[in-house]
Image (cartoon, rainbow, N blue to C red; front, side, top):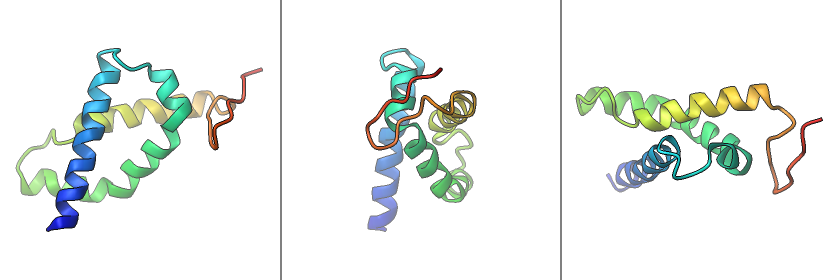
Length: 94
């Protein structure tokens, strides 16, 4: 139960981050550069868990904002392969 609570808290924080990006409180491109791959990987890692939580809690939109943000991040990564940061170095686009 403790692990489940920890995961739910983590995704609740990511959900708030996603809402902030959507509201333009946080810059989307900077987020992609700093943590895009990490956020995408974490969502993918827990995707089945999230689907189960949606069914069990009868809340089909649970963590939907982070899902939409990750879809947007994945498109950005695909279209800007030389702009993504891993390890703290920004590689400028040609």
